[in-house]
Amino acid sequence: MAMFNSTTEKSGTPESSSSSVNIIGAGTKIEGDIVTNGDIRIDGSLTGSINVKGKLVVGPSGSLEGEIICQNADISGTIKGKIGVAELLSLKSSAKLTCDIITNKIAVEPGATFSGSCSMGGVIKDIKGANTEKPKVNEKTA
Image (cartoon, rainbow, N blue to C red; front, side):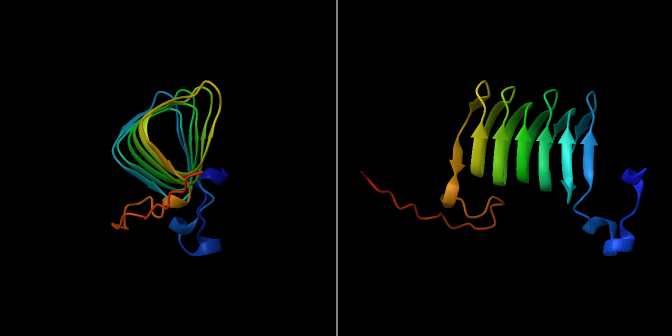
């Protein structure tokens, strides 16, 4: 089973592998914080924060409540809280979001619902909040 093999022969430490895929199955409930260097798929429910260096996938039966930081996200389930996506946030038709979104790009399929604020594009410098300066916005009128 490749799922349980150590990657020490390639990289020296198991933590440095970015090819790992983590799955939280339907019916599983987790309360707490998750940090992963790989990708993660959630079909169960998570209450807490999640920090994903790779891609976050929330299946149709998946639900998250809390703060989310990831590189890319593909959402089909329910999210409540805050989500920060460095690259692309993709909302599928079954997605239901009640949260504030910070992302570089967003794709929304017809049928997806969203309630909250959304900041996107070049205005967003650091989704992790390390930069405390407010970015200057140059507004242009037609």
